[in-house]
Each structure stands twice: as structure tokens, then as C-alpha cells.
Length: 96
Image (tube, rainbow, N blue to C red; front, side, top):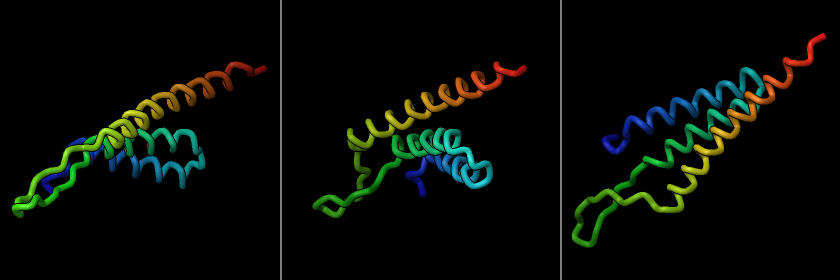
């Protein structure tokens, strides 16, 4: 439990909000935004322990591919948020 940082707790919270909003509101775009951001935060900071040849426990570094996937998910969340805002504003302008 000591390897879990504040960023991981926030990522778990955002992922939970995304799942609940998917089940309750049936809006997949905003749910994907919450889930993408939460999973990106989790992937960017989750660390695992390993045991070396001498039996010492050490913290493994975060692999580059996982870090790049986390950055991609966070950027995707921002893009989805802009897309949701565009759809919301474009739909409200045509009232007669």
C-alpha cells in the first residue's frame, strides 16, 4: 500500500466516476473522458516491487511504453472533453 501515491487515488476516483456515469447517464463520451483521464493517471504513477538476485526488494522503474500510453490517455481525455464541449455548444445554437 505504500507504493500507492495521491495520483493513483485520484485516478481510481476518476475511473470510478467514469464507470458510474456510464451506467447512470448512458453518455459514453463523457464517461470515456473520465475513464481515460483516470486510467492515464493510474498508469503514469503505478509502481511495482521486484526482488533482485540477492533477495533485496526494490521498486521497478516505470516502463517507457506504459508512460507513453499514460500520456496518450491523458491527451485523449482532453481531446474528448473539447469534443464534448463542441457538441454541447453546437447543439444549443439552433433553437427556433
